[in-house]
Length: 497
Image 1 (cartoon, rainbow, N blue to C red):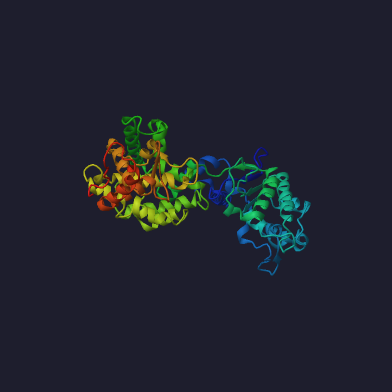
Image 2 (image 1 turned 90 degrees about the horizontal axis):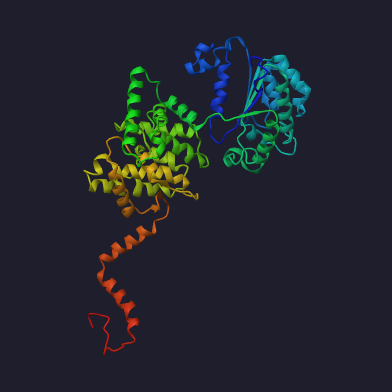
């Protein structure tokens, strides 16, 4: 935008569903809204301080595919009917005057050629933001609509990327999700791209835009949880930062004092830094959400986590929870709003399982804690373990690598002051009494089907109250075995004979 030829004129914000694309576009839009650098947070000022943003006088174009109907002309204040994306682009650049330069292309729904380059050159500096382009393209067909034909979008995409690349002080920022063929397996969400026509549009746009674009991922997991933290909490002052540093040091010291019980990275200085950066949310909770839950259809890495954590924080604040950090074991799954946020991405079968085996008021973990108030109950240990298993395992249930290992499970539970030696005993009792908890080697997970061990235990418990039935079965099985008396005059299978 400042005329630097070394900068990328075309950038594709390429990530999976809910990865921060729209947030990034909004940030860029505000950067070029005529405000001085001093109007932005310090972190932004450090990046753009030398850019003299306020003097650039940038023309901004925003095209959102879900807000523009491919067969619905948009009537402007003077009565002009704008049909296509290129017509809308021209109108936003310079109103009727700019539109008239490509009016014929808009009215015939034919992509403009060199006229587009001339238009952008005339109105530079220009910032063009296109979001949900795939959604717009998939609404077109092979027959000409007001917005053109399906194939016309890709001709327009090629013309636009070439025009922006050729014009100094012009920039195109597009939002096209990652595809199978171009991203090494980080596939776009089926829901986001919208079926077969959406996939065709995605691949075609990726092929065309990819020739000119610098592909950039807006939000890594670290950046995403920073977005969430800043949206939910005020920036800490000097006193609060001192307290935060003390909490981070306390946790890492606890991990070091219990060496071997937690993942090795939790003892590193870098993990202490992560705790400080994520405070008051424990990094393990962010990791589970961004690593495991983000693999589920419809789970949005930024908005989904933001909405969930907002609900969790409200519940914990309302209950006066005094925990130093919010861990997986802290998530109050018994609260209907919290449970609903998570089960919304899971089969309906999970709802009664949470009530019975994980975090209902009369659930198995609650009963176990109540039966041992001194060892488990005072710190709700079994309940925290069950919550942590659920958060780490529910989204991985359909995979070959389901479940969570003990060190990572403990990381999602442990708070300084806990006796780590009690964790194994609590988990063992939970495994004996829970209906839906499974274990394989050192991995644990909840499933939607009852475990064989628990089913057998339930049957055995019922039979203890029916000894007559047990004896009848024993005798029935023994009688066929005594047909051969051997050296005995008689063999009696039933003590009552």
